[in-house]
Each structure stands twice: as C-alpha cells, then as structure tokens.
Length: 203
Image (tube, rainbow, N blue to C red; front, side, top):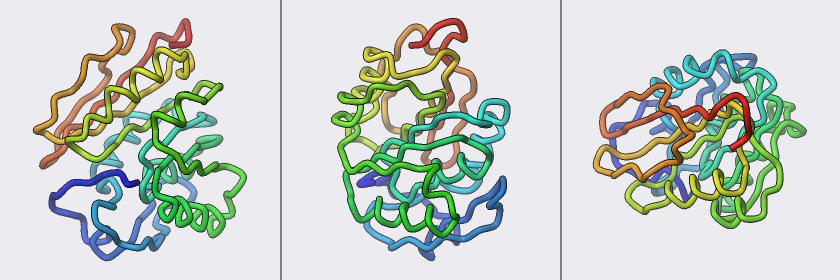
C-alpha cells in the first residue's frame, strides 16, 4: 500500500514481516514481506471472520484488492478459490513483493498487479468485480471516492460484496442506497463491514 497505515497491536507473524495464509489450498504458508512504516496485513483474526462471511461467495469470484499493501486479502481470496484478483497500490515495492508471492505460489496467472492510486485505477477500469476489498490508510478520506467510483461507473457485479475496513475514529461516508450492510464487527481500533449489492442488477 501505501495502505493500511495505522498504529495498533499487531499479531506476532505480522510484526516479524511474515504474512500467513490462514485458509484454503495455501493454508499455513508464510510469505515474507519487507517491513515498512504503515505496511501491515489485516490481522489473522479479522481475515478469518471476513472469509467466514464470504464463504458462500468466494469460489470463482473476480476480486479487487484496493490499497493492497502486502496483498493479504487478495492472496487469501485466491487461496480460498477466487478465480482472479487485481491488486492495486501506489507503492511499486509492495506490488513487486506481491508478484513474488504469486510466483512462489505458482499462481501468477491468477493475479494482476497495478501500480496506481485507487481513484486513478477505478477511473479507467472497464469490467465489474464480484468482491472488492477496501482497506486504505486510516484518516485520509480514501473510502468515499473509491466507493463513489465503484458505484457510479458500474464496476460491481450483480450481488457483489464490498468489504470496508476503517479506524474506530473514522466517520464512514454516505454509501449508495443499493449497498446493504450484511455484517459488521469491531476488533481493537478497527471497524470492519461487509456490504452487498442487489442480486438482480450490477451496481
């Protein structure tokens, strides 16, 4: 990322510069990443809850990991059966690490890495996604423009899922009326929510 810039208690593997895949075909695999200021995967316990929520949706899904950072969410999605994931981040070093992870997992064809700001990438995107992960740096107002572009440009498939992670002190922006809150939870300094769009039409 530049993404996931926050200060909170980290799980031990994260603090050591390791990302652990927690489910699916690569369960237990540990992937090293270069520790940097503001770079950390979504904690194991949060990912486990999230992917329990997504258990009925993840197979063969086309995913988008905005502000991807270490790639924790997108790699977990691929491990659990997603068909493809687009990883988007403005930090080329972070994306280079994700490419190496995909190669080591023999999954290069299942992931595409895009060096770009999230808003710039979405402004030129032309195909819808089934699942979108939005976990930007906290407190920088990055959730609202990403959600607006996803909705206004029709970048969500019918029945799409949108995951949004924010700091507990952040105000959630107004979201499209067609996005319905499916699940929400808090863990430490994090609020995380899963929204769904109607199954009958793309958003």
